[in-house]
Image 1 (cartoon, one colour):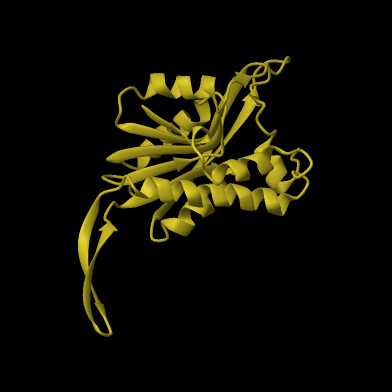
Image 2 (cartoon, helix red, strand yellow):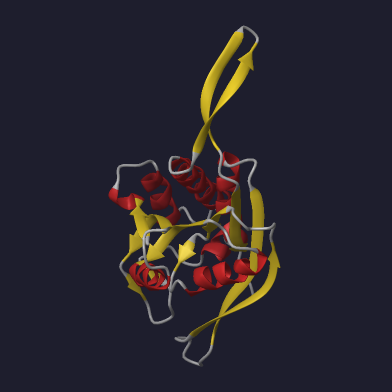
Length: 219
């Protein structure tokens, strides 16, 4: 798996991530969602550089010109609910892309809340055969939900290319996906990779529960 960590680069994404992490700014849900969306836009632009292109002739009022346009048949997929603003950022750039959604949630299998289970409940997707699938989920903790979401989407076809993207990932989650997706035919884009997971499988330093910060606490 090819991993791109934008935190190692000089990028405006670093400012967006710093605001997402700042506990004094997190009380502004609109700002939080907008920063996640802006990271999606910036990351989609970077991903667009890796797509296949073909030449198209464009007729203007005064003549003709040629332009190189991406020709990949892109599908953007995300996990409810925290993935929605991230998905929207990607869709702002890949505005003709297909869209796929999966409802997945994690739960604790033990009383100490240290063992994680993941359940898939709902899938909506176009045909994925031969498509470039961009699977986006803002938080990559253990890597289990990203893998499970991809396996679920495989019931809708076999994409020719898989790109995964997260805002903040843990090193453990990245290492897990590297084992599950060996080789360089799969790419993982991260705005930042953090070193630790705590005993409850939250990313440290991370930013907390992204879904709650976007939409409010759940019961």
